[in-house]
Image (tube, rainbow, N blue to C red; front, side, top):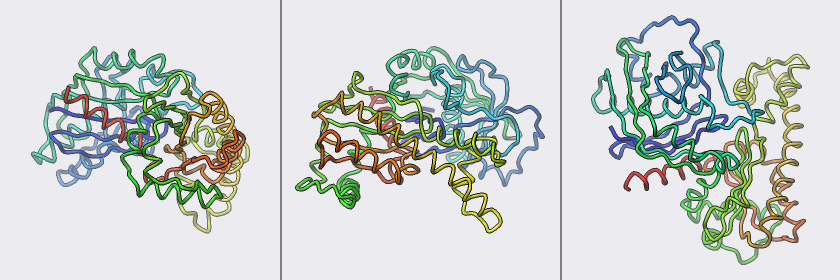
Length: 399
């Protein structure tokens, strides 16, 4: 089986797009796995198999024989199942200075995506489960800009130098997926998104132009096509663990001007968790907190919800000011060459109310009264990196 995949292994969520024989599908699950320390091992009934396969990335129980995973014999539960299991959970540490390229979790999540896609497509085609699948994969991945500069070749080499075996335990019969990577491309986070932004076309550009004009930035005479044609671009990619500022000059990624700010929306949640714990509102993980605030409160939980949201709002204000200061530094490097700024990413919508005014104000400090700082709607911004990565993987699969 040949698989083509663009995988955005974020600190908070894995977003991906993968295809086999032209059958393309999406991947979206929390970037977490739980260690299986004890397990009931109750296997699903035949009627339940289809539902598990359909949601395999939130259901998978797997171990790994791979140089990417030090304790690969330990079984892991993926995504939502892992979060709800009550077992010890591994997630990316937003305060860590250890590169994703060096963390087992990166390899676990990539291999899990490929193995899960293989099982899904086998089942969808044959309506039966395999005992073994052999996969040849072409994959595009991303690293934060500072890590991309240092580790991109090493990161790709880790995947390509070995054969990797994933064993899946969900069903009565074990499934082994043997994976070989024939091509691994590593891009800078945020830079991949620029390929996808332009593909969104005039409707999306006009929506962003309407949004900024409502905020008092006239942009007289500027059309959606003018924005699409821009070649000198600053991106602000708000992730869970980092904010990346990819800079494109004449349409090409410029690593000298591009930087990573080592805080993201997950830092907002992590700082809020520390404060909430002191106030008697403990949360076990960022995911638990994120789920709590994304759920409409009942009358019984409304007081707690309001208190939690108040703390998060305070942390968002601090975060927005820090990101704005980093934006000013990037503007000072790029100077007058930049034509447009795009703001996007998985954490962008959550902080838009406080961050967007800060960025517009920062642009004015450079004498750019009518400067197009365009904020993408969450319908698009969360998935831009994975869409751009899939485009790259598809190109290299034909070489």
